[in-house]
Image (cartoon, rainbow, N blue to C red):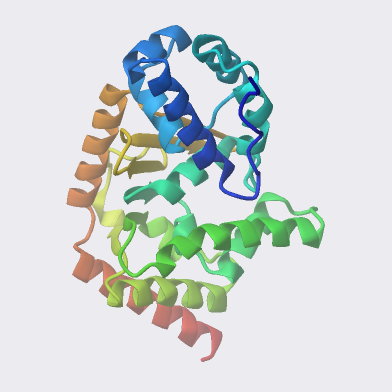
Length: 279
C-alpha cells in the first residue's frame, strides 16, 4: 500500500507536517505523552510539532517514522518544513511568533523587530554586517518587514512590548530615521494595536538586565520563551523556565513607565529628533 505523498512546500509545509503527525499519532492510538516518551521529549513538545510552532528536526523525523510506522515520510518532508527566510538561530522563533495568540517582548538595545520601520531595520542590519552586499541587507529587511505584517490584522496577535530607554535614545540610522521609527510605534499605540512601555533609565537595576526576552502564548499549544544573543538563540518550552521568565516580564512592566507616560515620552523624543534634523 503506497505511503503518503510528499508535502507541497508552497502550502505552509510546517502546518501540513504537523497535521500529518497528529493523524499518524492518533491512528497509532498514542497520546502526545506516549509518543513523547518514544522521542525522549515531553508531550507538550509533540503538541508543538503538531501545532506547527516547533520545527521538526531530522533526528525527530527518523524517530517518528520508526514509532508511527510511516516508512520515511517524516524524514522526506522535514526538509521542506525547515526552509526559512530567517537566520538559522531565529527561524524557529519567527515561525512560532507567526502562530502566537500573544507576544510579550522586552528589548534592551533595539526597537523590537515587529515594531521596526524599513529604514531603522536597514540601519541595524548594516551595523551588524558593514561589508555585506546591498542585496543581502535588503533581503534581511524584507524578511523583517514580512514578520511585521502580523500587525496588519486589527486585533491579533496581542503584542505587548517593553522597550528600554536606551533603544529610544540611541540614534540608529540618523535622527530622521529615529523620528520616523518612534512615530510608527506611537501610531500603533494610538490605533490600539500594541501596548508599549518604556523602561526608563531612572528605573535603575531591573530583572531584565541579562538580555532580551520574548514570551509567546498559543491557542492550541503550550507557551514558549525565546532568548537571543549575538548570532545565537534558544526556544524553551520547559514550564518552570517559562514561568520564571514570565515573572521577570511582569516585574519589568511594573518597573516601566505606564503606557500613557511611555507614549508621551516616545512622542516627545520623536519630536526632538525631528527638530534636530530640521531646526
